Image (cartoon, rainbow, N blue to C red):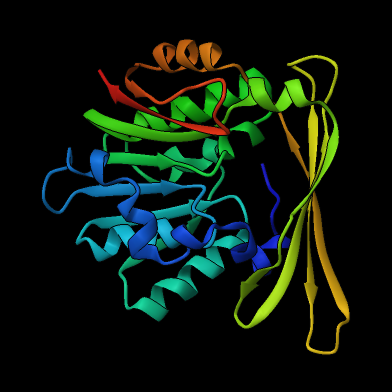
Length: 251
């Protein structure tokens, strides 16, 4: 899985105001972080631009951040340097993770930001979960966030245009999502994300990227987690919510 190389330079427009500062992003996971030992070893898998990884390092954890996008890894390294955080940033797909780290390395693995849906179908998703499970120590936990794909599919193909300007780095932009919903769950779906920046002269500059995704039902995810030795401890799944979190422990 690759992607987000075009959007990497403007990815902060896709992060909510509340989660843009690393300290505030990591605070949204305080309840699960309380389960960790001191000096825990943590992997932020599909790290994006590094807000979570840097926030975790700021809590005194030993942090590794990985992403399939070289551009995202580069931005994570830049953010780490900006905050003086000790984060090892590595470009790696899910299936490459066991090549970089021994089994039983981490106390917690994060896979957040709806990234799992970019794994290619049930086979790719299962392989990604297997890789993450292998890297967890017995009793370690996977923390995964996901779109509520049942809700996404029910709304069908559509164009979602942001209803307000988002300001980042002194510049304003409108965020647009174009959804191509395939007839069947197991088929390849597409999301085109566009960030239309407005400069001081009123000109509009657009960065966009077409991404593939393979959605899944919550009940399918539960089965797939169990299949790779991960027992769900907590789930916030709600058909009426846009997103949910699952915390699963390696047994």
